[in-house]
Image 1 (cartoon, helix red, strand yellow):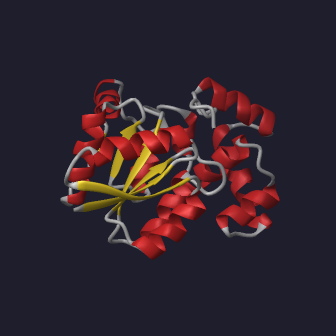
Image 2 (cartoon, rainbow, N blue to C red; image 1 turned 120 degrees about the vertical axis):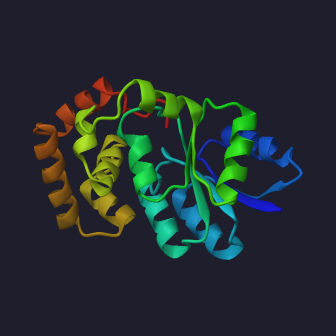
Length: 213
């Protein structure tokens, strides 16, 4: 039996994923949570085979949660889940250690297939994401955000959520000074001067929480 933990801040999404996966006799969902922090805690106690983690949860989500989960439990397989099908997010989640990446637009059978593939030790990329990578080009600076490191992207996403420097420091377990250093690097790499310009650039390239989180 493949055991799965689902982390998504939308109850309807969590329930939908749980229902889809539990229709397969080889898979069982053993827990659902609404935050990255809760996902890490439950992963510690339940030790599921696979964690399906939403990229856009408030607080600790996406890249940071992926990295922390893999550091604590390298044996647990991780599937990132998001509405993003292009841009830097899918690539950076895979580079951060995700074993699979699923679009929220994927059909139910593809989610089941992804879980089974990842459980067998393979890696899985959602078909619509893979298609974009192949046909739309995968060159490094396809968007300005491709220039950012994984941690810089995490700071960027938290900033776009409206988090303060102090809040970001707590979420990422770093000092406020370190967050300021990341922000300086982000602004320099993106060629911007402040959060207003960051928001405009993020809107231009579709990074403003398209699923409403």
